[in-house]
Amino acid sequence: MENILILGSTGSIGCNALQVIKLHKEKYKVFALTANKNVDLLTEQCLEFEPRYAVALNDDANQKLKKNLFLSNSKTIVLESVESLDWLASHIDTSTVISAIVGAAGLKPTMAAANSGKKILLANKETLVMAGELFVKAINHSKSTLIPIDSEHNAILQVLPQNKKLNYKSNGVRKILLTASGGPFRTYSKEQLLKVTPKEALRHPNWVMGKKITIDSATMMNKGLEIIEAFWLFDIPASDIEVIIHPQSIIHSLVEYIDGSTLAQLGNPDMRTPIAYALSHPERIESGVSGLDLIKTKKLDFEAPDLNKFPCLGLAYRALGMGHNAPTILNAANEVAVESFLDRRLSFLGMTGVIEQTLSEVASTAADNLDQILQADTLARSVARRCIGRSLQ
Image 1: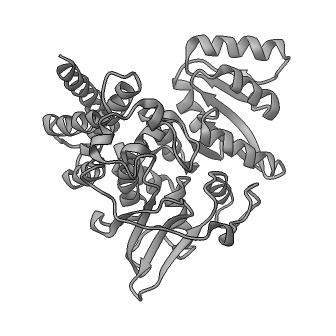
Image 2: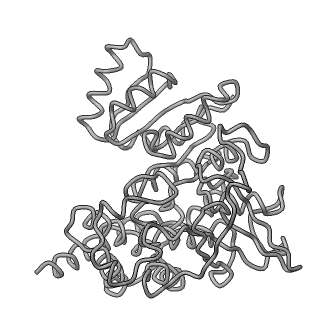
């Protein structure tokens, strides 16, 4: 029986994970649930899965959670403060941590899990983007198990040789190919992109996701962050990581080998599949997802990404090439830009300008410890906000 902590249980990944866990109660026990402020859903989850601990990071939501669970005679203990996430992630009774908090907020508890030797199912991109080198070192030192939940990286894991280290050097890999749907604006001209609204950008053609990741998909920054993730996950040079547009989102990624073979993982666009594989790796369990109907699918299309329309992809390669804490700067500027776009303070194309300006204005320096990384994150956010302020004048 695995005791599972879900960091971000009310988000898309967290909810899907609970659906899979519900199918296998004889294998998995929900040990703790955390969320930000969706207290009503968190309350429902606590009453259904009866975790030992729960916490909402928003103070008002946490007080309401306490009241809700008390009135329902729940035995779940409601913890206080953001620091409780680190405590839960390193708790002796926590065996598996599903890291599904969106953004930089997921970094510290995920690092705590790595330092404590936990099995980590990683959906939080920012952990590897902001602190890839530190995180990988912590994983190796503590002998933690790291399994990606992102559909693309999970697909790569599935088609790499099993029972070997997650790297390409000894596995005969020539390159990996990350597929991207292209988002809702794949066929738009640059002129059309000038008029895009947040409402339009939040309508992803294939996936149901949170607001931030949906906007990242629309700008293709999501794929840029995945390039950085793949660099650290699979120990592969950026030059051997290729992005291809695949609008149907049926092939989730591919691995090309030196003998000319290319292996792909296919499936319906449903996050329960990679979550189930991550939970049970290297075995397979029922996910609740139906099999792929190739006859109904009919065709699979591919095209090269247009870096002129979607320059965020190029910015990610640039940050990875700069090294040090440049990916931290990229990520921080992007989070600020996305928030401003959703608040209608910044245009769709304006997001890219803010990210590029911030990368140019903030010097890339050493990222030897978590404090340095968090300082760079704070500085980059401040510069990004100034860039936005200048654009509004």
